[in-house]
Every structure is written in structure tokens, then in C-alpha cells.
Length: 380
Image 1 (cartoon, rainbow, N blue to C red):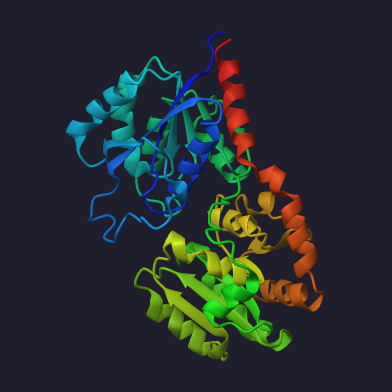
Image 2 (image 1 turned 90 degrees about the horizontal axis):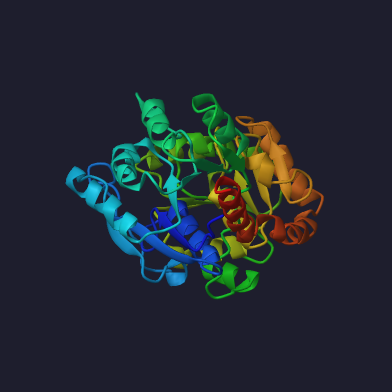
């Protein structure tokens, strides 16, 4: 049986923004403990007409991977074969490709033609995209079927994959903790001073891109009920509204308690994330739909409990009544009741200790061990 020695990883990595870039960097660092790892990333990830904002963030080198090659231009078909050949020339025993959107299907399929004799594992962050479009399933199926194994992080993704490719080998494992944002190790008091939050304020955090499927409107709808049951509460909404800010401003005004909201509209650089999670009492993820969420794992990296909805993989990582609470989606009353009970019953410290106790369950070595075990199994 050939021994696994060299692993090539394809996907975004520092300085690219976002959770999948963070994931790629952290996975590479974990695998580097036992293997020779080379990351192949993008010279261009998205063309500007698809992603008009800055795609890179140089503020947190914690995620940087030494020697990463930025050789893949996803919008240039003449590059794809050459990029595949570059990966092939490294002579890896295994290629791991990050998958989250069918936009990458043509590029990946062209590269895979150069990698026919190398095992290819896909890490499926989303088997199908959150915002569906024509032919997305066809593009996804056409790409993933060229791999030999998939890793998924939720039951929903496992179901989607099994429906499309019933014979595809896969394993489901929890999303590991994104524990690389504690750049200064600031405590709660220092973080609150920086944000202008008093010591006795009950701080609720909604963090990340504001999209319809994230369910922010239900947290806003719950706000008057929360304010009625929790004294001195503030709801921090921190993330990029993508031009939809007026719509949400109107919802906040109509809530009758606009004073409880603190809004930071825009992308939050990695170097500025720490104070929000260090200062908060609880993170709320009121999603309408989801596969899994890096926001939950960022919160857990700070020992912060999470109140989330019963969608996708969220109840697989947030243990109801232990590390947080699970509520029905699109139900502002249920959400308000859980948040109110969290503060009323004094669950903060107990849940924080429980989050810390679960760190091993979300350790990166489990994903690395899964990859190694599958390689051994697949090469017998």
C-alpha cells in the first residue's frame, strides 16, 4: 500500500477573504504537521463583474500558508490546463479541492483532466449553493463525479450529495473550530471598552454577511420581545449588507425599539473581528437555511455560546441546552424566548464552560485523520 506523503490542496487561501479561505489555511497547517503539503490557489478567484468588492484582506497573516502558489485564473480557460499541469508536476499522492459553488465547475473540470491518475478528494462546504440558479446541479454533479471521495460537514450536504451521486464515497464530519482570530488575547473588559459597551450591557451579536437566508429580519422582529424581558440589551449587527441596508433600517425603525441596535455595515477585516466576539454575551444565527456556519465556529473559538436555528448542520454543532440553544427557523417569538431565557436563567458561564469542554470535538486533527484513513482505505 503506497504511503501518503505529499498532498496538494486547491482552494482560496490568505490573503483571500472569507471562511473557505480560512478553512483552507487551517487545514493546510494541520496537514503540514505530518505531510508535505503544497497549496495551489487563485491568481484570480472571481472576475470583477461577479465580485465587485475587494477580494483580499492582508490584515491577519495567521492564515497565511508558506509557499502557496497563486496560479489558477478561474476566468481564463487558457490557464486551466496549465494550472492542472502545474499541480500534476508537483507529483502529489493526493489532491484535495475546496468546493462551494458551481462557478468553479469549468475551471476545475479542465484541471482534473490533467489529474486523472491522482486521487482527488472534494471538501464540500456547500454541495449546492445557497442561492440556486439554472444548471447548478448539473455543473456540480459533472465536477464532483470526477473525484473519488467527498467530505461534507452537514446532513443536508450529505443528502444533496447522495441524491446526485448515490455511489460517491463520502464522510460527514463537523466543521472544525476557527480558532485563529484571537490576535491579541483581549479580555471582555478591554473589548467592551474598545466598542463602547458598558460592563452591565447584555450584548447579542449577529455577525457576517447579511443575506436573506441568514434570517436577520427574524432577530429584528424578536427585538421588542427581547427588550421587554432583558434589561439593558444591545443587539450588534456586524457585517456587509450588500446594498440592502435601507431595507433593514426600516425594519429596525418599525420594531419600536431602534435604540437597541448597533450596526456596523461593511466587511470586517480579520484583524478587527476579535473585539466583537470577545465582548459579546451570545452569538445568534437565526438562519432560514444553511448547510453549516463558520460563524458558529468562530464564536466557539472565543468560547462564546450560540443560539441558532434548526436548519442544516447547525444543530449538529450547537448542542441544545449545553453549548447554546436551537430554535425553529422563521419564528421570532421562539427566538426571543430562548434569548430571554438565556439571560434570565444565567446560562452564560455554564454554556461558556461547556463550549470549552467541546473543543476536542471540533479539533482540526479529526479532519486530517479522516483524510489519512480514507487514503489508506482507498489505496489497499
